[in-house]
Image 1 (tube, one colour):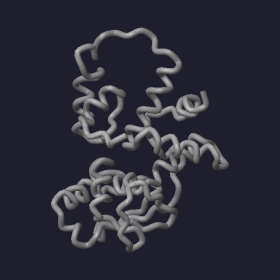
Image 2 (spheres, one colour; image 1 turned 180 degrees about the horizontal axis):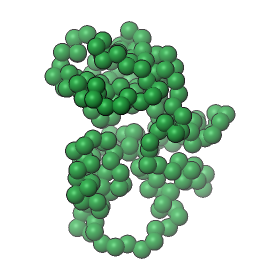
Image 3 (cartoon, helix red, strand yellow; image 1 turned 45 degrees about the horizontal axis):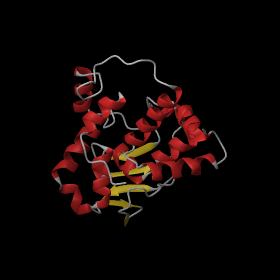
Image 4 (tube, one colour; image 1 turned 30 degrees about the vertical axis):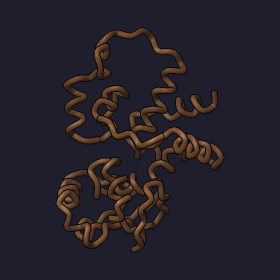
Length: 205
C-alpha cells in the first residue's frame, strides 16, 4: 500500500487526535471536533468492541505514518520480545529514525522527517542513513548533514525546538544540530492518547 498523502487534518479529525502534533492541526480539531464529511456530526450508536480496537490501531499506525503490513510486522516482533508487549511495541516505534528526527526537532512533523531522511539530510553516528524505518540504538548520535543545516525550514524547526520541552530520553545540542538517543522511553514518558492494550487485543483476536 502506498504512503498516505492526503490531508492530515481530515485524518486527525477522523481519529479524534492530533496526528501531526502541530498547533495548526490542533486549532482545526478545536474548531471542528468531529469527523470530516457530510455525516461527520451525526450522532452514532455505541461502537462495537471490534470497532473500538480497530480505531485504536488506526490511531497509532497513522500517528507514526506506517502502513498495515509494516505496522503488524513490528507488533509481531514486539510480541516475541521479553517484557510488556505494549511498551516494547511503543519503544520500537519510537526508535524509528523518522520519529527520532521528529522528536529531536529537526523536522516539524513525522511526515516531514520521513522526507528529510529520504533525501539524505540525516547522519547517524556520522554516516548518512536514508531509510526512515532504520532503528536507532541507545547511544546513537543523530545529526543534520552540514550543508542541510542552512536550509530555511531546518533553521525554523530548530528555532522552534529551542522553545519547547525535549523528550527526556533524548539529549540535544541545538548549536551543532546534533542529538543523542540516550535511553529507551518508559511508558509514562510517552504522552500518547492511545490504549495499546486494545491494539494487543485487536491482533490477538
